[in-house]
Length: 247
Ligand code: NAD
Image (cartoon, rainbow, N blue to C red; front, side, top):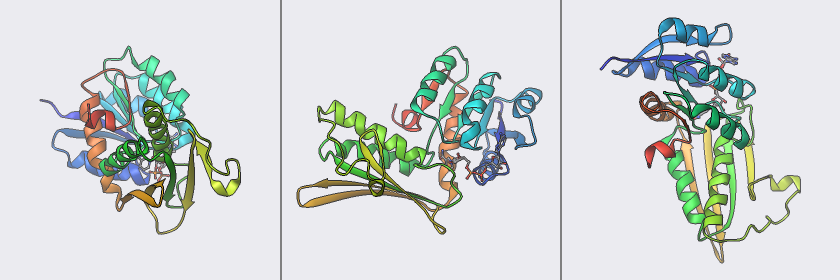
């Protein structure tokens, strides 16, 4: 089989640089363009006959870039955060007609995907839960896409388990964090951190902490490569790496 021809957009950034290295090292892929602010990645993808575009840019252009990827015949693997649930649904409709798929994954680290899954599972039995997400100070969005996704999964799991949507204690008070889907989310931005998240579940006389730590950006790459390999084979939109890992 021919190598998958890949364009990386945001290639000068922290995640972009890591992706460029990972694609270059993958035996079944070929990096055909590394684009950043000064480049037109759609034009680059077209002229290189690319099969897939990976986007790690900034939340303010996430939606625009997703739409631009859909102007091409390429699969899209989007790690840029900042998509709202409505954005994803809008794109899902537009992606249905495509031959190649679009993956939007708030977290490509397989351990983080497991952390989200275990947290949702645990919340079915221990519904009192809060999220603390901790990141490097260069991260522009808060709460993180992973925290938003975790809160959504917890809310879905609780609803399926028939548990009520009790309001968090002290909701609306700034020190209690931001309430996302009924879950308090606290964001820490601190030098020395990379990407971490702890989900704390409380029960009578006990707590359960489920924690994931990203120690290096290399942790995201197996998920990015899996996304590229899968999305060139299918149409439609996939939200979250868990859909690829557990289907
Ligand atoms: P970064 O600031 O290091 O890099 C962003 C790069 O995008 C820069 O090189 C910048 O010049 C470029 N850029 C900005 N606007 C652009 C545009 N319109 N067109 C092309 N290039 C543009 O950021 P980062 O740490 O690499 O993170 C990038 C994104 O990925 C963020 O949204 C971050 O939250 C997200 N992220 C996702 C995951 C995941 O697993 N999904 C993991 C880490 C980071």
